[in-house]
Image 1 (cartoon, rainbow, N blue to C red):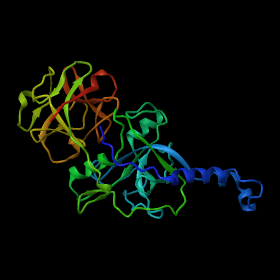
Image 2 (cartoon, rainbow, N blue to C red; image 1 turned 120 degrees about the horizontal axis):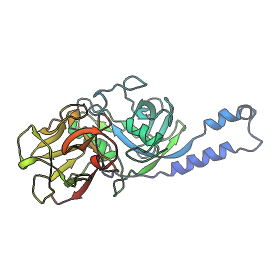
Image 3 (cartoon, rainbow, N blue to C red; image 1 turned 30 degrees about the vertical axis):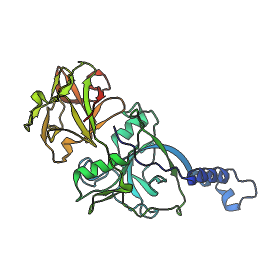
Image 4 (cartoon, rainbow, N blue to C red; image 1 turned 90 degrees about the vertical axis):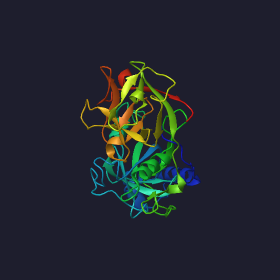
Length: 323
């Protein structure tokens, strides 16, 4: 579950939406230039849309780095002239579309693809849909601490207490003179996250809906390389896992997929923030590998990296417990 960061609802959102509606319905006294191209003028009017905003950066990009599907290296400072790259479904927001996000007071431009965004828009994705607006905003992070970068992404992402995504307003086709914050989303020199956003660590058990057994560190082992197992759910330490941002941790070991292939074993390895240790808990109860659309599942009684189906075998029921 992603934590809830600070939320601002700016009056400019309502104002801009109203401006767009007024401009689009101007009386016959409008200028001749406007009257000559009514369709083009209407298309450029700003409008407010409700969007689920997530974040990605150098270490959890696919592959790690700044490469994008449509626009070279991700970047941007957040001004109108230099908007920050965001990823989404190109049928939802065409490549090059500029949005303004009042919550962070920055302009962003569509320039990359996001698998979950594609699924949320075109079908029933892990966060909802179809036609759930979802953008993934670039925060950078090169040279920063891997854990701090991932935690910043999760700290900025806003969710509801039940784990469902929180939709916040964006402005499509915004004017160029809206206020812009000079604060970086993530400062790689100081490892500071925008607004001081942080994540909270959750502790508890993850019970597979098909087997009724829990994801466990067999024998409560502290040895790197130990394979995760399905075990009877108990009150012991073996199946009590900490989830911090994007990392499942026990005895300072992180849950890791051995490879990106279907059927790969899931083990507890030394935490180093690499891309094979990064996971996301979705509202539908699946635990997805951040790099590709693959999930932790019960495969014939074994814990494996498998297809994300949303069926009982790859869904997990979380029970929270004190630290």
